[in-house]
Every structure is written in structure tokens, then in C-alpha cells.
Length: 232
Image (cartoon, rainbow, N blue to C red):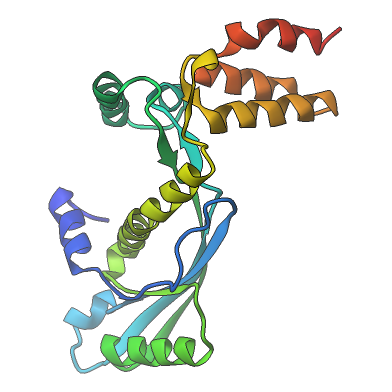
């Protein structure tokens, strides 16, 4: 357990991404990134004669990047109060329908192994093996043992930031960020997503999912008659 915010900052500062994935997050699909988080064991400070390294592996499943606006995000659950304040600030500064990109991740931890050798030796061996296999979607992260998941989050943050520009450019090239005046200025991607949900409901999907999506975009009044016609 960490004792203070200083411990988190220290963990982030000590984290090194020694091998990045060789491609960005997919714009129009999911991306699965495998990872190795390599750390010195906590007991290394007690017994310095042992040169052992902890290796945790797993994978992070990144869902398809989703175009959102401050209005949409403010209607989502699960953010902290500080995050909602920030979203209100963005809404006031750039507009309620200024487009952004939301990334969602699911971490699937794998095995934990303790190997002989220093962190540098173990990480170099893993990197050599990945390069030999021409593996493009595995990251190697040197982190802090007791806060290894903070090191993983640091990687996810950096990787997302690096992918953002290419993702936004691809959205732009398809016109998906263009505001739709007839729908109050929401991005074109939102209108397309709503059309897909209407089609799914007509074929038996749960209409509550569609209702929530309309509410999040503030578009229920616009689609109310069409929505109610689904139940006739």
C-alpha cells in the first residue's frame, strides 16, 4: 500500500517504457496490447545478495476509441468529482459539443514469475525475444514492485497520448468530427451511432440502451417521436 501522493509520483518517475508497441491504437477497432512489467522485488532492500527480478505479464484490451463531447461525458457515470469539474470547464471554454476521444481499457493480468538476474538483464532478454519474433504489440515496462499497476497506467497514458493524433486525423478524414447543425451541433459520429442503435432495436435489441444514448447526447427530444414509434 502506498502512504501518500508522493509515493505515486515517485512510482511514475521511476517507470521506464523500455519497449513500446510498434503501432498505434486502432481507430476503428479494438487493440490488444500485451505487456511485461519488470520490477525489483520488495525484499531486494533487505537481501542485496540476491539478484532476482519479478516479471508480471498480461494484456490490456483497448476498446474502439469513441468520439464524445463534454455534454456526453458529463452524463456518464464513474468519473471523480474533479473530473466532472474539468469537463464543465472544457464545456464552458470550448463548447458543449466540442469533440474529444474517449478510450476505455480492460486490464487482464497474467502470471507472476521471479527470475534470476537483474532488472536490466531480464528486460533485455525479453526484448531480444520479442524482437526475434517480430512482435509488434507487446510493451516492456520497468516499474516499481509494490505499485506495478501505477507503472502500467503510466504506460497506458503515454501510449494513448501518442495514438491520439493519428486517431483524430483518421476521424477527421472521414468527417466524423463534423458538427451536425440539424442535431444541435453534435459530431457526425454520434448521429451515425444513434442510427445503428435504432436499427439494432428494430431487430430486438434493448431500447433502454438507445434511450440512454439519446439522453447522453441531449437528443431525446429530437428523436422522441421516432423512438416512441418503435413500440407501436
